[in-house]
Image 1: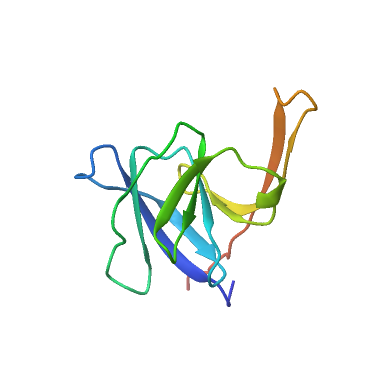
Image 2: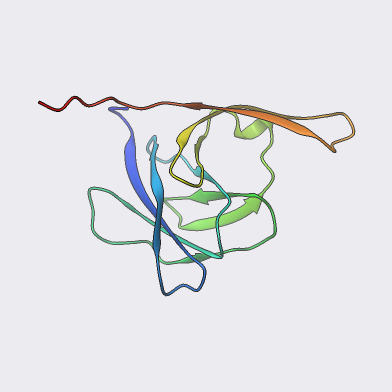
Length: 123
């Protein structure tokens, strides 16, 4: 995680009242997948104070791909092309997408996310 950027993410139903959604880590220039977002999302690097402009929902899909450098949001169904990307789940679970596959009729899917972290000891 040493070469990654930490991001704080907040969400809002109305664009006025914000709630902490979670913290995610990305490599420089890497987009972030977010699952189950409400209407608005904003984010900031944890080492900076300024929040991005609010990004409003653009579709009715379960996940959003946020380009953190360009400040853009796209709702989507994940695909195999999203394998390896960081993903942030409601409640703050963060990890990397290991796989996402559809059945041949595309009516069912399976996916896997690897969660990771750093255990810090208190003295």
